[in-house]
Image (cartoon, rainbow, N blue to C red):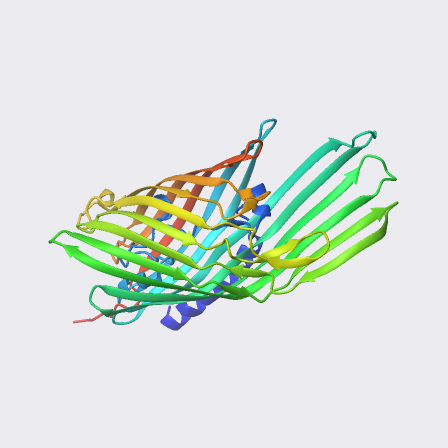
Length: 430
């Protein structure tokens, strides 16, 4: 297969995967009712086992989309293709009930290669957020022999296709940027019905078609510490800006199976993306042990979103709160110069804490605690030792901060394939 044919195959895979993303939903959470939904963790196959550790990760064997400065480390002979999916079981518990839900999601598809000396490139598809829930509530109407049933459902999410460059202008310093296109449909439905046939019922629909650009920058600085150790500092910034997309609100009152009243309102320039800042530090020992920590901060508090005030459907701030995430993790490879398969197994572990970005009834939403364990199992052939099957097990606990709210527990299995082939090697015949 020629290089041109490989690029055409990759583009076809990106188009096909975008269709899968449109049908894939990685959320069963009722908290995805708020904002953009449940935000993606941003991890690839290699760092899901480290709870998403990424800012200072740099080795040229993996595609680290969270910090595009890392692309400059990709080997000049290599073409890296990375894809993955997740299987999860969620448990949702309140004071009076407990239920389980299972689902799968196609997580990401990325590729990376060297364009020129000290210049690497990556492109791919990533999820940004997901919405998926069904909530039912029954109650008896006071002083009347009526049972009121409220049903709320949500579907959709948003995804990003990106192209990124990483450049090392001088030794030890690398700069990078991802330029992407973000799109998706956010849909929330609500209905109120009564046990008596003649009673009026109501239908609500909130719908947004989000389409905008997305830009993220990265920097990495490597500092050797003697012969066998080094520190890598990573910094990232995501550009916040207005989203020039409208949101729509529809309400209908139904009496005797006939629409008796209704509203249709539009909120212009409804959403914004937050400014995002990140910093991370990774210590590397002999290129086979990496331990690090990340901190990220998203300025959601000033971000606008659509809000129905009972009369008007307007875009306003004050619906979110700033989001903080702390991650610690590491990876160990027994012997990169070994001769046996077990020498190349990658062992990973990590922990993260994430504060909420949404407000529920004016108070902070639930916090998220995550623990991950993972392995990278090498696929060794006579050409290379870089292709890896990545498997990670994650436990997430979504802990509300108000009494009476739902607690969520997720057990997730993530499987990814990092295919690292030496596309650009030139063969010589003596």
